[in-house]
Length: 100
Image (cartoon, rainbow, N blue to C red; front, side, top):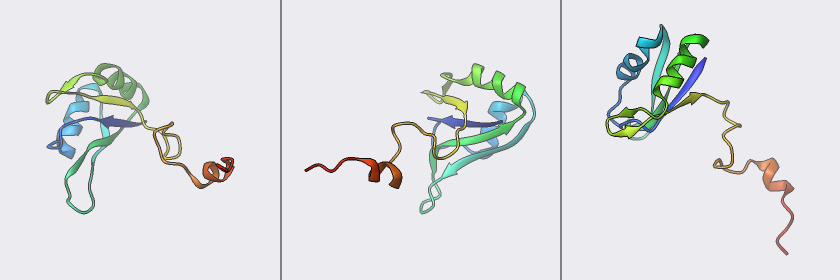
């Protein structure tokens, strides 16, 4: 299962993210997302692990404190399913009625 981990400190590294999840089971991969131009962490990342340990990790770590910040931990969703905060895609834009 792919897990989204957000709202962590910008100093978080791939290995630190991995070690945060290892107590719950074997971690297949852990990656902190970085800014392309600066190389600095963007404050979120992804962890992959088996379904059962992933569910335990999500329950235990969501809302927990990491460097003074409450972590957001949940199952990752594909790019197009982020909810209402995302930008409009072309289909949504074309379906809106004109303003005038």
